[in-house]
Length: 615
Image (cartoon, rainbow, N blue to C red; front, side, top):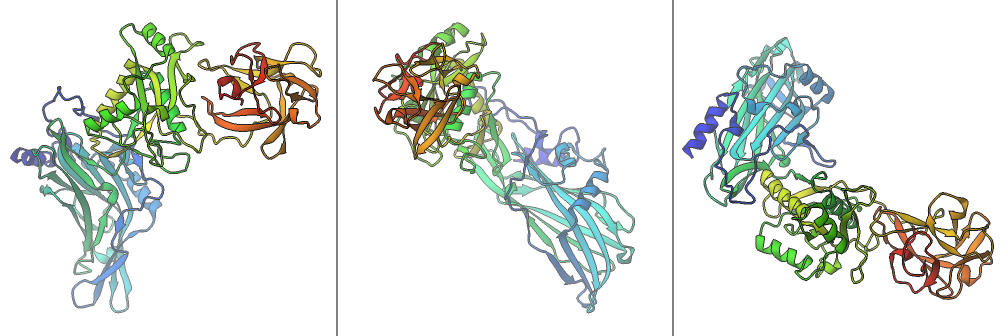
């Protein structure tokens, strides 16, 4: 503890090349797989205050106090005022008024040019706008004079140190000569298991008319439970400002500040290191697309199918952070539930994995992560009993881009197909190259350490994702496509070669935008449609079971009426529909279930296979 006190005091004494937050590093613990790796302490892209967040609580509006007990003079202090004026004051002031003495820990480049409050996991830039000091004569309340200041606060913690620094900066806008001089009294407090060091000050906290010097006050604390393995505490930071003036004779009523977003948590739970964070700031884990492309797309698509799991904004307009599961036994149980030892991996993934790296092997991957409280759980908290309840995916070698990975739905029999949007998936399971599966897992452990994410801490996951599409109400007019599994290609419903005339059969062909491949889907009654070819105005007509579909003059008969039912979203988030004839109860598909050039289109038993999902 004595060493911590010396380190903190040394930093606060303005060793510019050291700074409080980088004073000491605990020895590396290479044997611990979740040992934190030090992250850079310069955060150029802070988290902006989220919409709806309450501003810092100020416990006074304009409060006045007789300054000398004689009730001849009153001093008032208030905050708020002209935010643009505060911004101008900060941008015009010297950003480093005392470059030779101000320590590095007070410098936050991203805060210098901000005009609004911002946060990240280790830093806060609090813009409190304007501070107004007024002196009034009593009992008339005639204004004697004013002093106006722009002010801000900067809070810094550190990943591998238990020091906390709060720096307040005051930029005068004006001081009236009639009040002679004004002095600000700034006090910062840390409530909880923290021990305060001597505050330091740069520049006088007193101003006279025309005096526009900038002043800063820095307060430092260290967590007082350092060295206690497994310990953690939350610490509340509060601040208070009051003012005095020779003309006012006394002290103004204090304005007190507290910002719930800057509550500090210090812990010693990672590899015998200790550090502190602004723990209410939820960090974001970014999946490395370049290193793990198939896993990147798997996680992003699963987030879509789950309605936005792990995203700041889901399909329901709400945020859905994930929460760390730090219990290794519980995480392993989650993994076994979704990926049991007997689960059969997709052969295409196995072949592609070995081709890319003979030393690699295909593995079962899952999202949400096994090391999360949300494992196997949808955004409403409903759990699946096992991995068979997940949406199924697989990685494969991209056909059009040799050496690259692609990703798609796993259509193997026995696995449930992706469900309709609005009935969100509880999870995703995929055949995945082991290097990518393990790589994301290792990155997640590193992220937990760098951000000091403890058990049940919330965090977001950024894996790109795709624009979330709500399902179409019905099959849309235009081309009617069926998707080839695992290729990214789709085929269009087309008349056979030759003039489009009554009786002509139907097949699948490459989409070319021709009129013969364009269809008008016209609603007849609720859920029932007529499908008309635009080339000759003929209607899609059902024949005998298993026979080729044909075109005939539109007559509104049962063999020309089709019920369309939304099945699920395609890999590119298009709504896919089953097309069922109202007379026969059979579905539009191909004779052998294949989706390829020249495949004959027939009606057969509905089976929710790729050839029977149209978009």
